[in-house]
Length: 532
Image (cartoon, rainbow, N blue to C red; front, side):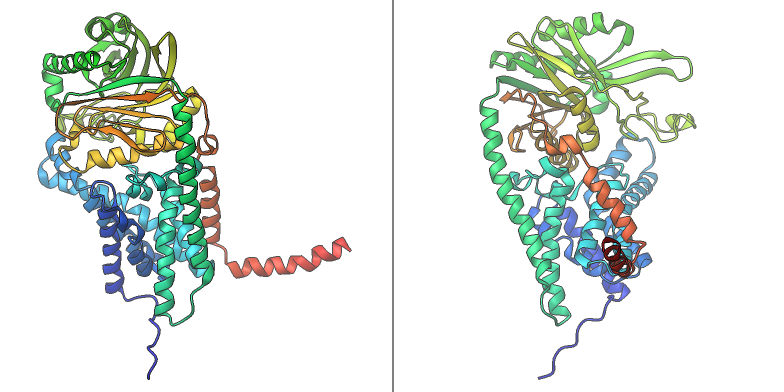
């Protein structure tokens, strides 16, 4: 019987391109929003074989193809958002959508290029793929940040290692399963025995992740049970984005009606969404006007999204997307201004340099970023509790949240947002899925109040206590616990290990492993003779 010849590497261009496109498709289908999460255990297999033994230039192109396919499928909602709110014609919006997706596909291009360089210099194949992957997740700038680990946001058992290494560590756990399966297929295609370490290392990694997850869920639950409790309510008014600006009274009516209902049901703290009080207030008048317009009507400790402004000699009116905390008498106890502004929604790229862009895109906002990480304060049973508040997509930026948590040492995380920009698409669910990681990374409850969904309460192990539907009015009422102290490993060291890995991966991409081994062997006798 004739033995089948091993597959010749690298694969031909057409086959590689098809595999890359398939990899991008499996990724977005397994990711949050589509939520076929078991696909995350196999999503990278086609991409691996598309990139395997390719020269760096072609590997970068194939990686970019996979990432662009993922972007077009996963971020399809960009098109409708731009058509609705940018003011540009649909073809121009389609061009912008492709440009954004192509840019974000650069993360995969970086992964492919670095993997190819490391492999060509004889570094271990699977380790090189994983190191290049982690480097790309860490260093590549994204307009809409996300992580592969977000695919398993519905599986708390697999989220717990985020306490140790953030979302990247969860991503690597999933990738390790993909790479173990790649080794099984690769050995078959190359007609050789399995490399045992390529199977044993991922198995040990996944086993540790599961056992650690089970242990930490139990121990964190015990800590939660011993912490002081409070009943928190959220309001989801579901105001249209333009309706919020033109019909302030209707917005206040919906928020106050829902708030009164929550108070009657026992809510002790209320959270409204981003810019829920849309009537702009001058910064100099905030301490008098906000209590008069909002606080004295709520009459319960609350966090409310407001719009502040001041005059600026150079820019005209300077607006701030802010959150304020109020006590039971309606008086201000704290304020936080949004730092990371949303492109197109809150500012236009190059809009300050070319003001005419704002005339072409009249629905785009023109806000000023905040500069402080100071927390808000909620008084409950005679105690002032510290709350770190994140506005809009600040809750999906791990480094920013970590900096805010280290600055304030809060007892609770609150996110107020407005995803009405994106309509009834997968975007609000993707946003929510990625936000869950902040609760696990810092072992705090996360309370999300959104204008149009998804409003939610997430416990410190990433379980959803309650959530709303999208594009509908609604409220949530649940018991949370004030989680004081308890810095996690990720809260302490952040992404420092991943930066070290990234530096090592880049160096490995430019230095042959054989050269390194020869240098080490040459140095060994010299060191030994010196010791003699």
